[in-house]
Amino acid sequence: MNRPILRWLSATALSGLVAATLVAPMSAASAAPAPAAFCADGSQPMVTQDEAVAFPEGEPVTGLTVVKGTQPVGFTGEYVGHVADALGKGVDMLLFELSGAGIDTGNPRAGIWAGMSGSPVYAQDGRLIGAVAYGLTGDNLPIAGVTPAEYMKQTGVDRSAPARVALTRSALSGASAATERQLAGTSLPKLKTRKVVAGGAKGNALANRTLKRVPGTSATARAARAGGFASVAAPTVINDPLVAGGNVAIGYSTGDLFSGGVGTVTAICGSTVWAFGHAMDFAGETQLSIHNASAALIVPDSTGTTGSFKQVSQVGQQIGTVNYDGYGALRGQIGRVSGFPVTTNVLNAAGKRIDTYAGTVVNQDMAPFAAAYAPAFAAVDTLDNSGTGTVRLVWRINYTVRGGRAGSLINTDVYSARGGELGDYLATGIGNDVASLMGTDLADVTITSVTSHLTLQSAKSVTYRHAGAQRWTGGKWVWANGTTVKKGQTIHVRPVYRQYVNGRPQGTSVGTARAFAISKTARGTVKVTYAAKSQQVPEGCEMDEEGDIWCDDEFGEEEEPRTFAQLLKQLDALVPSTHGVVNVSWKWKSKRAKGVKEREGYSVAPGAITGTYTAGIRVR
Image 1 (cartoon, rainbow, N blue to C red):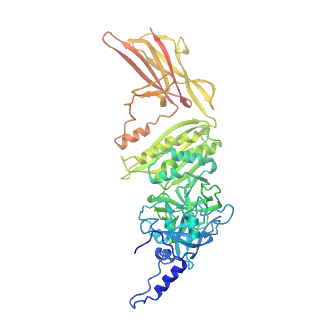
Image 2 (cartoon, rainbow, N blue to C red):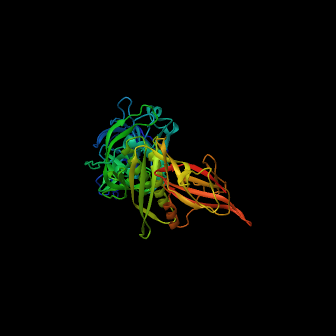
Image 3 (cartoon, rainbow, N blue to C red):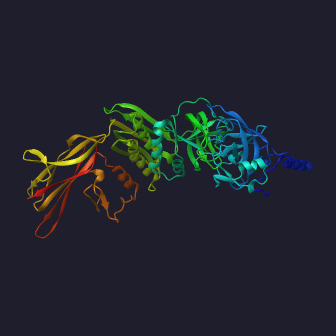
């Protein structure tokens, strides 16, 4: 069949077509075809795409969506036309002008708003035509692009198609003058999926920073980073069942860590749910959680830039799992629940547990984000400030590799920050560990749980900086710099730290003493250098007087692991910020040779340490 690029039929033209059809005789052998149905059991009759594009302009329709709470309300509309092949080869976008449900009322009117995606549109006889999925959101116009139900039913076959459909004046050459004036030169972008994350306004900015900070190359991770999250409360119980036209929340993770998108249910056949009328992340086969949701209100856009949207007030508990994220719909099963737990236990300085933040990661691609966000938000939420404090985090990542072998990775670190950065620091180590395990091609790794213990040591940023070195001599500790030592003697040295509280100096303290024997061939000066382990100078690099490390161009990154065991060793080698290193070096010379001798030891500070300090001891 030859299908025009954009076909518009006026009522007059269609009546002529119908009349011509009626005079054609029906053969005795032909029989009326069975009515098309969206559900296999026939419980939801369906208008085929061919029927829909042949509607006369002005054909009345009805629909369902939610503007407040959980119960759908009706809206009405009329057929405007269609854009051929807009959703892929052989798949048209149906255009309707809608009214009601806040679409064309109010000042300003909301138009077709984000969150309306998936709202079912029905013919006058109750047959399902399709789902609202596209709109002129910048202008708040009541024109909706509808994905045909026939296409949604086939979800599971990937199709590539544009996410924005242009409506040129030439393409509208069959439309009425009023429609042409209204639509020419515009485009119908896909309605934005309203992405939300638990934590309210307090955690929202932190969640978006964590999302951008944590590695992830999957389609889901890229789409989540590109869109960002608005805020929502953690899931609670919503007793109302999912219904066509009702809200639906689709999650990457659940519980206190809920993150995902919100839209509308198009149809339910038995336990199978279709929603959105477009992709969320276009990930194909996937795992996403299904929840009911409650709406607070529709927020109209008065700027013409962001688009109107549905404000979600609450998300329910997980009641199912999406297994396919296709271009034309999300498809999932009610009752099918999957995922692995992520838990952060919060302890006070005395070691007593004061709270627990827990959730389930349903989509493995978002595991690094959820694992990182859990302790980051727990710290910010419990400390009740913008992100200032000192905490110790211990994390355990349980996993299995193909074949069923189980393992664990355990790490710990101390974080201290002021000015709102504590959560960001907390997210880095644990998020990178999860991402490294999931992203390796050295083994087929599945994360089974992530547990962390967060000890709140102080609501203030408490740090320590290397400020000096002391030496034991003459029966007492003295400043090491400028003292002398005989060849062949042993020196005892210890670091001096200056404590800072919220960036202000608060006195000094000392660290553990170490002994170093100086060789009989030593010459010149013995250098005693204390540095934070993170600031230790790698081989092939040099540190300047200000503590900055400079490396030759050929100095590369840490050698890539060649086996999964080597990867685990690298990840397990995380040195906490409380650990420092002391390096003692001197030049030596004998009758036949000369060189430099180095010895190294380690120190542990009361908290996170920074900076370097070098003392010189003359050799005599």
